[in-house]
Image (cartoon, rainbow, N blue to C red; front, top):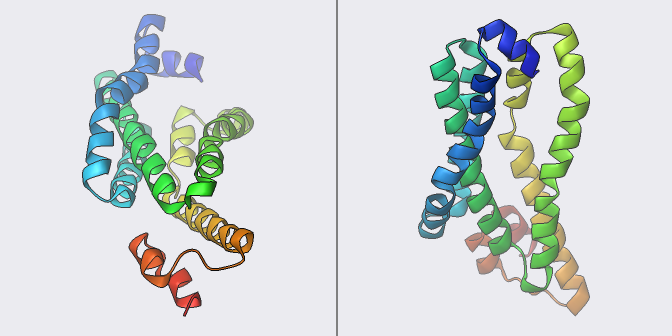
Length: 189
């Protein structure tokens, strides 16, 4: 993909290297601050906002060919990713019962290498039939809803396992409503 970007945008390899580093720069700029914000606000709201920002920024990446704009958008993607790291980790940690927190966070962290594997499988065929912009269009395509469904499934499964392990219901209805799972709370009535 790098060679196509260099040719299409008529940039140097050094400029391309700066583009690659822009995501990391955005990540570094916001990682600590986003953790603070996630602690002060509801981590789920921060996660939703960061996911939306990441989706919008990657969509915008597909729509521009200006190097400076691409660089700024890549920094924005890095900042949004930083917020998803902090808020997502906090949301998973808060939703999981204490005895399942390590497993919950481990499952969440598995997303990075799985995403890398999927990208390695998806990007080359996309580049054979389209240009580099098609990669950004696929990247941002409706990622919020599947992530939310996965988090909801993992949270419910962990609560059910904790219940079975102790042979009683550990999470009462009020706790489930407080962590944002009113549907599971209704099952408990």
